[in-house]
Image (cartoon, rainbow, N blue to C red; front, side):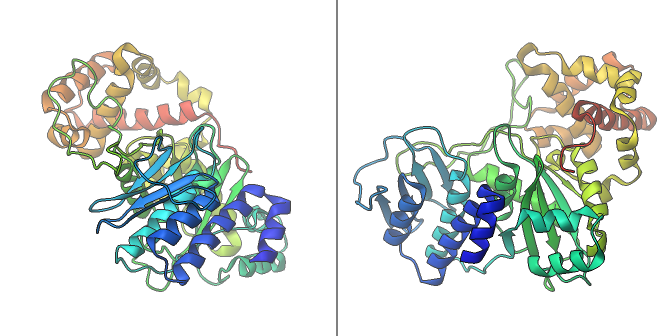
Length: 417
């Protein structure tokens, strides 16, 4: 571990810090932690006060110097809710720091073990960016790529998939990818590094992996993550004057009575198809193409799988300017620019949900709206674009135009080599 940290520090300080965070909590898990040791060590690692409250009522709160703190937190800068109750949190006086979310993710994993949930060391690791770039290059000699694969812990004889992750504005995409994937059941062997502006995730399923479900697991991770921090409503789900919304379930509160912090939306992922490890660049190119179809928000839209897209993925080969010039795409662009009470996002969210679910009522349920509100928005879309969404041909045109509009908005292929 020390050797890896030294190498990573010279190549990528962020990756080295991520490894250090994960190693810290894995060491705690291996030693049989208790609430006091978890809160005290997390506070020292993060350099700010940290606390936890477990479902069974055990609680602890410590300052960065190791002193126990009493009373309720004055300011919670980040929190993860535990089920069925309780939470872990950090109390940073200023703005959250780049690795606070990763610290909280692993503090929550450790707290769940304290609450009696089994833990298995995940196959997830931040990786040496130079090795990942060598595997994804496709230009290096085969022996060099085989050596890089083995150093990363992959078998050169078993297929793998590559995922491209785009983080929220102002965040490190590699760190976002580690925080997103460092939860739930192991996906097999997973290595993460930052490549350009993107997080590159290499996934090689383990022997117990339940099929090719990388995209499904990513969507579930996004849902769980949003739920732990207080779900953010889908775009335009309840704007002023939109009609009667379905009641939301009560959200959990922490020990200080405050509600969990919900992260700003923005994480997107593109999943490439399975490829021979020596041809990983093909999956990386597919992942970056799929990422252009992904839209932050609903997990079903935020994760795009190149295999699921099928022939639609060919749209990514069309220059963005040509896509923008198409009349249906121009119509969606006009709708998107309607900023009255967030109506632009609401109209496109309604269209996306309707195209995805196929029925008005299922789209309304997905958006937590009354079906009449969704119907009114779809009528506005039909009027602007000249479609009859009850007609299968027009519905197909609408779905295709929606894909093309997303690609046009994303521009050319995402940064990442």
